[in-house]
Length: 282
Image (tube, rainbow, N blue to C red; front, side, top):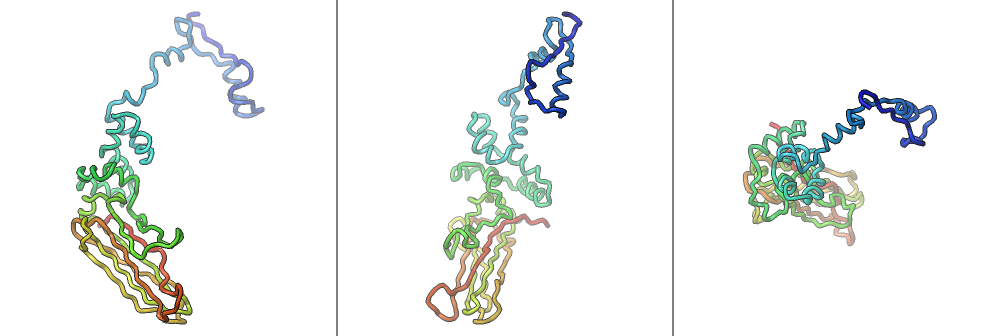
């Protein structure tokens, strides 16, 4: 009827469950006496409003709003789920804008520095023939900055090679970022010896170009550890800066042997080997 209201009365048990003396019971009691103004056709005004304003589907959003919405999703969800929805969503995920928006939300000092470098030195799209995703997508997925890029650094996954070749571009650092002179490559290794057997240890780390030619090298030859001396681990570290353009790989090479030439595993003990990339803040 015109001008009258509609009284909502509960039909049977409350849908939210019966909680004696709790918030749910109070909510059901309130709804049982709630009156919603009626419209001229006798339907509640809320139902009429819902009919006038249906939910907006994401595919109806203009591109600039769709990019903003999708930029709040985790990188793996964007690549694994959203990219296969339709062509428009695939173009958003394959483009740089959605990933730049994610970088812009990191308000830490390192995040702001990275965003500034990414705008000054955007990745070249020519490498998309080699990799299935754009460079910024790979970066957000792999999160290479400050992450240890050495596999099995402590030997917890079984025996590892004495030499590892780290592909920085494959790990998510795009080539233009490497060439920007705003990147530092930090390498470190911990080594030691058994108490009853001395050892000799060597470390060599080389920065290589795309053809694996040596560009910059660091080597360390600490004094040997003698038998029956202090047992413990020692650290060797180095930071590569201003290494020029064209760097693609890091070759991490360890050498060690014992001083007694005993049969068995008595050589240098190594652990927590690391290769990390970071942004220069100054």
